Length: 583
Ligand code: ATP
Ligand code: MG
Image (cartoon, rainbow, N blue to C red; front, side):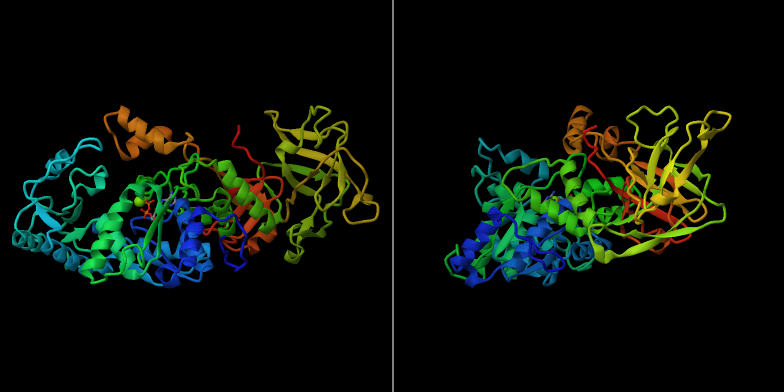
């Protein structure tokens, strides 16, 4: 269903959203046109949930020859910023999608204002001078009708005059609001005279001081869609109950605009799908902002963040992320997807693209006692067995090597197929080696092993005719002490210790007098989500660029951190080679 960067169309099961689009097109609705929009509020960076919305908004438009505009939903001036606008664009492009125009809800502020004035004149809106508490009290409940505001039937002229005053900059915020006059007894609570405008008296980063009263989301979104020519307004399930109001405001905009076409033709259609939610992850920009502001993570692109830029820095590829989104699909039911499913999708993807290298993360020295001290051998190591075109690179072999501490055991049980007294292993790309039965290692005063000794078997050199000597031992990785480089390795663990932080935080807040923000989050944060280690890595890694995809053989997938330099190499662990979420 979706198309990737390389324009290779992937064939996926068709979602219910796509079925709707197809049948609308077949019926000739909207003159056979197809147009979508992706509408983020620029109050933070995009996260993995947005990737799901982006994939369908942009993906369907592309597939059906339509256009998807990027529309910033910038109706809350106090929280929004151009930094976020730029970040949002960067992340969409990185995912491989192209927008038609970049638009802003604020582009429509004048049109929305003029429409509101017209609606007041038609008796469809009024200025209410009650407090927000009073308005809330009169709302009723889904089973109990609300109560009309005493200002509901005030003269049109009065509402027009007060509406102007609301925007004058002199009106105190909260003193009055503009409400739509719909139906205070409607079973749909959104119809009980919803607020259209509130006074903020704040400058807007795009419109400056022109506006002091700002439109509400519900009064903005549908008309923007309609004026822009959006045919399918795809959003998430929490908007299902807003849909009748969305449709009503569009009807009003059409009528005021003199459009007498049948109301069900030539208009945007709102379609809702289930939000993405993953175990051990907390989404929503406002929550993520708390983690950034409180210094729990090192910025929006910290590799522990579920943001697109965090995932990029962590080493997930756009293709891997999108293949996961294809796998989970779009439904009408809320779900909590397993992180292990996400990781399995990105692992499959990284297996195809990661360059295989050697890195020793918990080193101990191995001395090949029968290999001359000044001798050097070089081999060609295959970069990626999944893709021959990736070629090979040179590695160095010498008498002293670093190997993983866990690849040696002094009292090894029979089933330990790595190094130990009298045991044999193959060194990747090199020889089979054998430890002596006696004196196979040296220890310090505390009993820690400092050196391991082994002899190489010359006729077993990889690639040579007699190399295939059968041994019980495994193949282990290594780097040459003289030729390797020290590097910083950052290993990440889950940021949240609980499966569903969103629900746990809400519950904790309820049970603790409504505490909010970091106070409600702290009990669930993993204090050990970042481990920094020193490792020895092969020299070729100094030639890798930031964000390059790597596999540290036998250890995991890693990538080059953007702060890495050839003098100070830094690698991020993307994901282990195997699923370890069950433990
Ligand atoms: P905020 O905390 O500011 O509300 P948000 O994470 O909900 O942030 P929005 O800017 O409101 O982000 O969302 C932009 C678009 O992305 C909307 O169409 C919204 O429905 C969609 N979206 C947001 N979160 C998810 C999610 N978890 N899964 C799928 N789509 C999402
Ligand atoms: Mg939102």
